[in-house]
Length: 250
Image 1 (tube, helix red, strand yellow):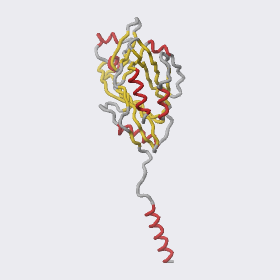
Image 2: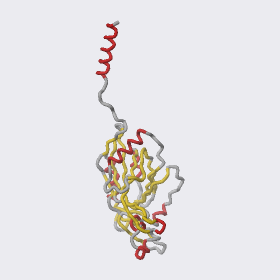
Image 3: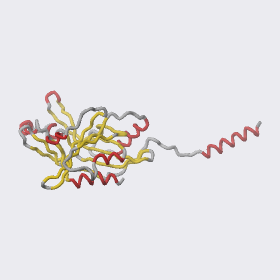
Image 4: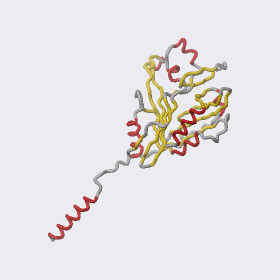
């Protein structure tokens, strides 16, 4: 009996020594430095009387912009109808598989006295989306004809919209934390990143006009190319193509 007990203990010890002492954390991910970014674009919007206004990295609010001369500094001026401080593409590795990480940092805020639209306090925030690398080819490639507008909806694996309120810089650790939460507790992503793109040949050369928005995945809204008659961001053609192609090299 003692012999059998001694043998059982010995086998248990051998079995324990054979096990890995490392515990694999399946909710972690690795995020690279940025591979490409858009940090500057001209935002254009037209007023009801046909006057085109422009601003760096924001779409002017055509209905309210001219009133700001009298009303002073407020949300309409700082955020416009859409804005960004930077749009970045990075690589994120999750469970040994590589994805694209899209990050938009932008300005938002709130009124201290919202009932009278007074005491505007602006601050930074950012969104992120994780999607398959192949999704980028839908956004832009050399086969797209000029002067034809189109829309792309990204199928997100993970996303968080918005968060990072008040962060001066993009906090990669926070993004890792949220991705870890999504991995640990899978859920249906209800938000979709939508881009409208319009590569154009102008008298001054080729440019790319674009708009973007966060929409619900089940949204039935239909893209209208004439939306570019009202507002858009604009960057040089080569800059936009590099933004996409550099990320495709990941």
